[in-house]
Image 1 (cartoon, rainbow, N blue to C red):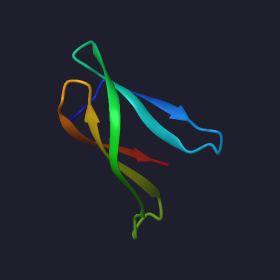
Image 2: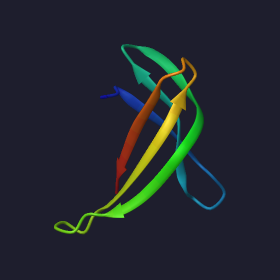
Image 3: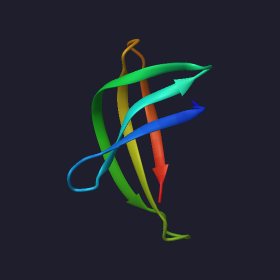
Image 4: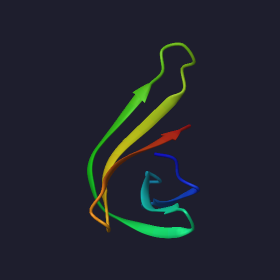
Length: 67
């Protein structure tokens, strides 16, 4: 699913986690991070973080962040 914007929260150690997503002009909070995984892409060497989250409206979504 594509988002117009993802709002991130950086904790005290600088680890960012998704806080909310904006879709069709509506802000929907992330109420739970079900799991997260950090992976390094073999060809490019870039780090990708994947979060499986539950939103306030009950949907379960996957959010990716590339560094």
